[in-house]
Image (cartoon, rainbow, N blue to C red; front, side, top):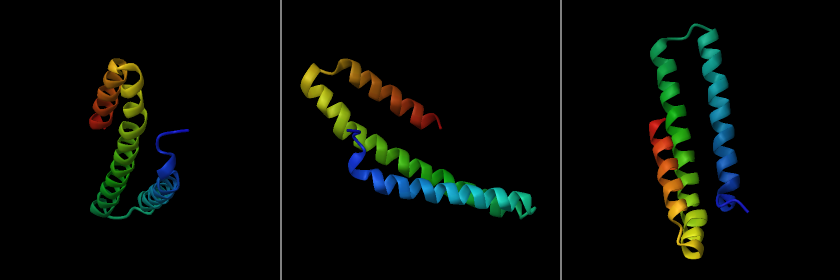
Length: 91
C-alpha cells in the first residue's frame, strides 16, 4: 500500500483540477489572451502542484520513511528522503 493511500482521493481531485487549469491555460494561449492573465494562471498551477507534492512528501515521511527507520535503522531511507526533498525543491 502506498504511503499516500489515505490522501489518494484528495490527490486525484487536485491533479484533475490542475489538468483542467492546464487545458484552460493552453486555450488562453491559443486565443492570444493577455500575457499577465496567462502568467497568473501558470502561477496558480505551480502553487497547486507544489501543494500536491508537499502532501505526498508528508505522507512519504510519515509512512515509508518512518516505517523504514523503525525496521532497518534506515540510513539509506534518510538519504533517499533528502534526495527526494532536493529534487522537489529544484522544481
